[in-house]
Length: 350
Ligand SMILES: C[S@@+](CC[C@H](N)C(=O)[O-])C[C@H]1O[C@@H](n2cnc3c(N)ncnc32)[C@H](O)[C@@H]1O
Image (cartoon, rainbow, N blue to C red; front, side, top):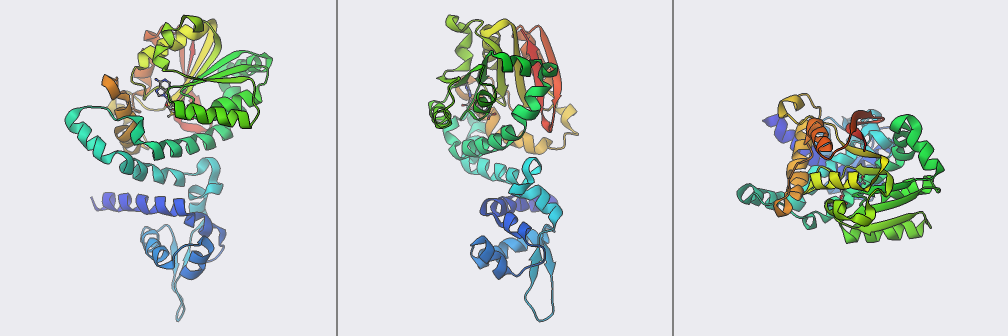
């Protein structure tokens, strides 16, 4: 229990260190430094930095150098910097320390109410969390989407098609990070980004205009209604959904809608969390408690709104495959993601 209390506290203090840039500042130093030097470099108040260093040092993240008749000095070893700083790129786990504190701030009271009422929680509760998720997606898609993920799809065949010109739809596109990157990389293809939220689509349109991307349109639409849109039947050669199916209120309708809008030879790439549907099979998942908590605090309640299905983030590959089959996909392959151990690629043929 003491470890649990300590780790919870350390996560919170690390989130503050990440947000204020203290890890990045300390990572720049090659030798231990005084509190004044660290505070000055970070532009932060030294009394607050002192208390924060108390957490980091007792947690054995920063090292304390005691020098006789001189002030204490503190050092962040480089191997911590490799995981905690903005320079760490794809290995940056520091950014995730913000996730639980943010969700606590957005939804703790509403989630506790949910235990009594069983009701869902709308996206309006989570504006700060949505901004954070968007930053995360930005970092991830920029690094892997065009150079690593798409070349891996269907043994490179999708890239060939994208280069020669096809119709592509990205579902739950949010602020359009992924679909803008794809439209930019494949000017002969035409792209449509769909999201239910008018606010995120406004932002996506603004970004696309700013970057002068013309082979791209955005639609505000509930993806669960796609299957009733006759004018969209068989319109797309390729549909993508990145991290956008598990928190749907009507996921099966969405998957049937994807099938409806695909051409007869169309393909669907659903990228979603790597887990099993059966709790007992997740006992060795390295981030089981963390991911179930994010699901409890966000994915499940947003999926329960209006009597929704509320799959939660840990719906798992078995349930995902079952639903894809129910949605009449003929072939469903479950593939590991290059450079991304936390997600799976469900590659489906109509
Ligand atoms: C976790 S975000 C995924 C963002 C994006 N695909 C990415 O990887 O950066 C899920 C998105 O799905 C959208 N969404 C949720 N329900 C939807 C629905 N029924 N139809 C369309 N979009 C929906 C949300 O507004 C949100 O922007």
